[in-house]
Image 1 (spheres, rainbow, N blue to C red):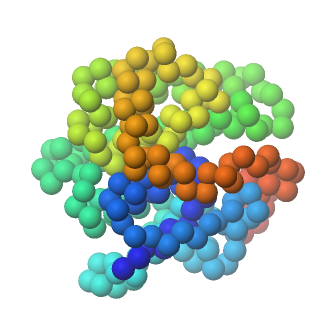
Image 2 (cartoon, rainbow, N blue to C red):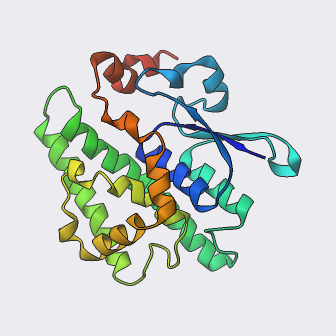
Length: 229
């Protein structure tokens, strides 16, 4: 059966659209316009109580029962197990993939997101914050570069770890990073960029990214409304 994908074109959203395209899983796209505040709607909060996207609803979940899942990392694990693809069966290799997925969830996403925010969207330029998060982004890029000097993909074979990390490297320039400084990471990035399913995943609602943020959009994304729920 078709999975419902609650989505907006951001790095976290791209993770799941890429995975669905890679596995050729049928999905019904349900836009969650986070600039318009769709993430705060009561019906959506029943699916994603943290008012973030993406989320999925699978009507044919475990034991043929419906299941809803939020948090992009959890969704990737679920889809990998459901399709038996992009995660190894061997326990040692499996945990290699999981640890790099957690590296993205705990480091790459939050830190690169902060670098992006303070460099691009903060209402005032705070040198300390810009320097701190730009430097941390550079450090994390270095960790990836070192890992990729030894393996073709982050966890060995192409996996959900790559799908989780790649979208966060797409806006590298806005994070103050030059891929030429990280040659192994650059090689990996260019290789993944050539995958047809990745291109399809990035293309989902891509036209929505061309719109500039107005004050209402900034309030919905960064303002006090999220604390009022």
